Amino acid sequence: SYQMRYLAATTIVMLILIGICVIFLLRVYFVTESSCYKDLETETENSISELESNFRSDRTMLRVIASLIGNADDIASMEVSGYLSNYNVNSLIAQSEILLPDNEIITAKGRNNEFAGASDYNTECQFREHISILKPYGQASATTIVRNYVPIWKDGICIGLLYSSAN
Image (cartoon, rainbow, N blue to C red; front, side, top):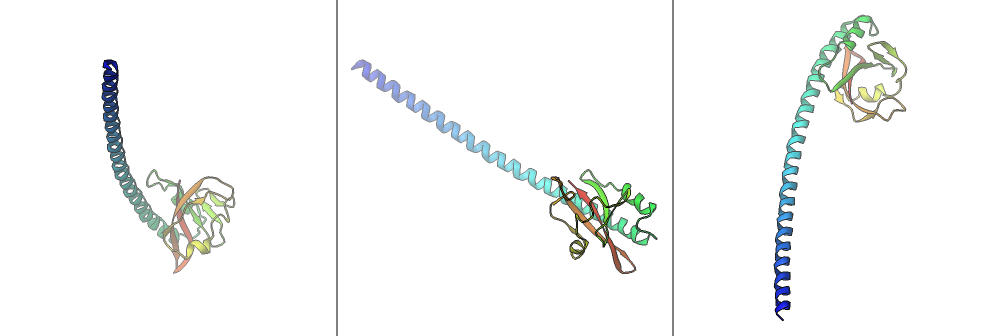
């Protein structure tokens, strides 16, 4: 009787303490989760803003370089290779290249047939200035990239698409 009342009281006190602990832990969990989501939202917005800023800067530089390339005598010249090799606006950009109407690629090292056909000039040209969707880098690569395209105009004709690649 006394022992049963003592055991019952102890059990009730223990259940109350366990209940309080569970409620406290759940409250901490939900407050922490909410805080993490708010931090994630803030960081995502900051990352998007930085990414947009990088692409805007990249597009501006691509326009300048495209106009210089459009004024060059030969699109495969050393002068054009110099423009491609010296281009580096931000850490997001890995390289810049030119996609020609025959789907051939001109890199800073000259013409490159290794990735010819990886992008379709006619498809990309119809969008004019644009940022591509994620695409494989090369035909058999698991690496994906985003490209920022700007047309190269010479005498009112688009002679190629200058693009930068970002991993």
